[in-house]
Amino acid sequence: GPGQRPLYQAQWNDDLHHALHVLLTAEAGSYYADYQPPLAHLGRCLTQGFAYQGEVSLHRGRPRGKPSSALPPTAFVGFLQNHDQIGNRAFGERITALAPAEAVRAATAVLLLAPCLPLLFMGQEWAAPDPFLFFSDLGGDFGARVVEGRRREFARFPAWSTPESRQRIPDPQSASTRASATPDWTMLGHSLHQQSLAFHRTLLSVREKEICPLLAGEPTPRAQWSAIGETSLEAEWTLAGEQVLRLIANLGPAPAAHRGPAPDWGRRLYGLGLPGPRWEVLHPWSVGWFLWEPDR
Image (cartoon, rainbow, N blue to C red; front, side):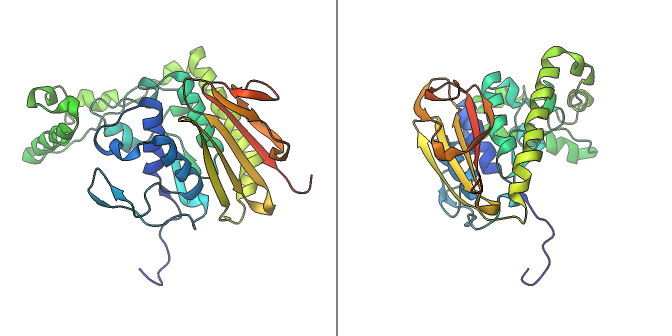
C-alpha cells in the first residue's frame, strides 16, 4: 500500500513471453489471441515493459494493465519458458518442441541480452526436452476436483472443445505425471545439449561483461523500436552514461530487406546468423547487438 516498502523488485512479464511465443509458433488460441500482430507487442514489451498498459484485452473483454514505460527494465523478468506457461499446456511441451531450433536460438539471443532480467527454467540452458506437466498431490474429493478443473480449463481451446478430447489430458494426480516433469540429466552429456549449454554460456558472458554495467543504478531508458516487415525489428535503449544499446533481429523464416550496420551503431557486441560485417538483407532467425559509446 501507499508508504509501504515494496516486497519485490521485479515482475514476470507474461506479455513478453506471449508475444515471443506467438511469433515463434503462430499459436493464436485463448489468451494468445491478444498478441496479434506479435511483433508490435514484442517491440512494446522490449522498450516499455508490458504490452497491455490499459488497452482492452480481446480475450478478457476489458481493459488490462497500467502504464509501465517509466519503470526501469530491471523491473521486468523476461522468459521463454517458466513452470507456469509450460505447465499451462495440456501436455506440458517446452518451446523447443513447438518451434524450430533456429527460432528458439534467435529468441534466446534477444532475451538474454535485452535490458530486462532474464529467467531460464530448469534445464532450458541445455535444451532439456522433458515436458513439465501440471501435477498435484491432494487427497480425497479435492484431488478429484482438481483433475476435473484442470481438464475443464482447456475447453476454451479449439483442440480440447469436446469432453472426449479432454480425457486425453494427463491426470495431474498420477505419479507418472509427476515423474515426467523431472529432467533426464544424463542427456546433458550429448553433443546437441552441450552445444546449447555453450550457446547460453556465451550469451550470459556477454551479458555480464557488456549489458550489466549499462544497468547500473537501474536507469529508466529512453527507448524506441521500429518494425522491419512482419517479423523483424530494430530497438534501441539509451542507458547508463548515455550509451546506446541497439538490437536488430529477424525472428522469421524469410530474409528481410535491411541495410546495416550504420556508423552510429558503434561496436558489435554479439551476432547470430548475420550475413557479415555489412549487409543488405537480414538472414532468417538472425540477431545483432551493438553498443554506441559517446566517449569512443
